Length: 423
Image 1 (spheres, rainbow, N blue to C red):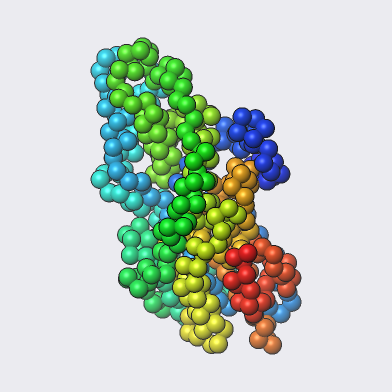
Image 2: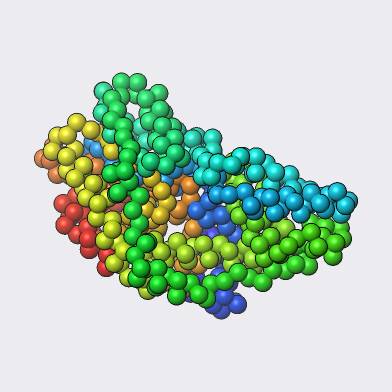
């Protein structure tokens, strides 16, 4: 843990130093070399942050939770990448030119393909476990919110992986609090706000497409790759129609393997520079399209008004004596990314210049599978309401807003300035 924290600190302090070494940020490169699975970015399985709670101001106790979570670990889309790898390596195996590394890559790809089984975006059992564990930690951490016969409202995107994630979470809550009364829902009107990102705006697409032009795949080192997969690299080359597509297929297969707890053997055959470039491209794409990227402006955040209004109105309902002690929402990564950017949650929603992404935005940490925002509301006997923001179950500050004390913010102040985080 200390080593990981030192890497994160180095990344945050490096600024735009990436340009100094051929476009590669040295701290990020080191982090990816130490653990290549980090390059999976938003395909990496869920890891919660350090769950430390700063004591609330005297007299304040938690009474309500507002929550938005991305679905848990899932599969990706289509089987063409797996077919490409399996076809080439099985032919190599039949010719007797597959190395032990090549055979391990083949075995891993077969397992990933079997897990996919023709079902795009399929939630894995790890994804189920991620939400079950998250629910149990929430109850253990804030038992006062769920005392007695708690009433909880939960809504989901209409997409199956989100519905199953909701089921895993709510089932775990009921196992801990059998007297819980539920309101569960999904549907098109809910999709209007729970799955909105604003990325479809023409102006946003034009800006992000232009800004991404200089982020490109690193040249494929065919000598390195073929030598690791085949005892006869020249013969192996004839089995691969496109090395560029083959590289991409390997990277994407490696990145999704962790969601199914499949041991990785693929990242080790790819050159570190290639892994870095692909990770960097993914993070720049996410931040510039859905995050708080300086060059892309804030117009697309207007689309979040429905989701933010839902959060505010339901919180005010609870404050006024409403019957629900928690509102749970189960959606997707890009809407969550846009939401935390709108709200100004430091870390995932930090305001960044495009060239700061490599050194300051840790994709594997800020938008992994199961990523979640929890807003914990506290109240004292005088009726004053404070709110604390947790992201990945870790206390986070709000950008450019003074807190009441520590990570605790005056709710009225947050509401009054909520659109101000667009700045």
